[in-house]
Length: 172
Length: 284
Image (cartoon, rainbow over all chains, first blue to last red; front, side, top):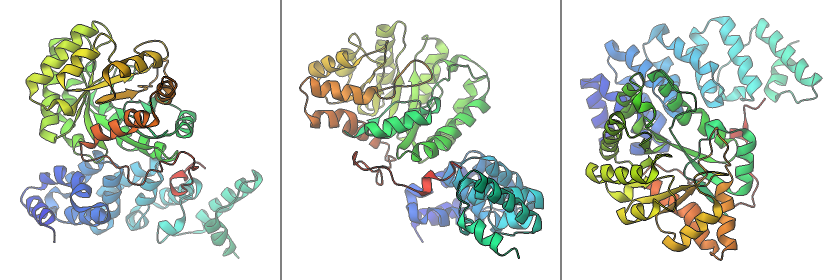
């Protein structure tokens, strides 16, 4: 374990607010390759009493890499539904990396069905391969929405994404 | 010609501008935090703006093969509005970000006591966060404003090689050259400085510590003024290496002192078309 990381984890356990200055500098301290994993560890070190407030603040003041790290960690953190406003905010953006990160296992488990269907459709619309999302739940209503999307694309003479073709081919 | 525009407000520009900049050789930009034409009235407006400089704008730039960094600060004009001044308390959260390569734009607009206070406080933040500083000089009373700027910079104790004093002209370049600070020039269609005058200043003062920018924003301005200055330099007998120093190596050296410039995967071959696929997603 790197000295910087072990010291960071110790500081966060002693003073949760310390994560505000530690979380943003992870990439420069630990390298781009390790940054996502280290950020997840820092979040996991937050005591339960400070978790919701700090997670919301890190997202609010985070750059896209920090926001993605928060979104990716939600399913592993005992935050209950407190992460849903962050997921909804990310899904309103036009940054494909944030939209994809928002639609992970946490959204799958907790987002209401209507919002979840719209989010999957938005991914498809933005050209995000569904394979990047991991597990995707396609019910009858979402299938109908994807069918309409494919019809619209075809009418415009534009290609239908391969993953949508695959989902619709399984219809029958 | 590879070009790094060290001062351009891309949030105000269109995707056509990004394309034209890429086609002309621009591969990296720094977007300084500044006022927006329409005054802000709350700290929240700044926070959303900073998010845009760190998030949406780099995302947009990447779609055109251009690397986007930013500087963060309370600008001098809005330092005079008590509804905005509290943004100073939020700045530390942003000054640690990977994409922030300097504190700026700071400095003077009307040279008020409030501007004095914000300028000094932010020079202290630059020292604390070990960042370079981008200093705006006033459009009115420029010579006096530049002199006072250099006094404040000196008093702050920051190393002059970490400071660029921007929007200079024939009357202000000499005192900045003597101070040891970097000299910034905004090349504009009508005002500030033009390509021909810039070439004369480069002849007189050399190419060291010189930064040429378009400072393009929401007013009448031209994001290709960097490349046009490069062409004017070549026409006047400067070498391609001189142009590369002024338009690429100098900004890389200056902002590189932040330790946060990320140019490793920028495609600097101007003959190669931008073929990235993943960053071009999201245009459906």
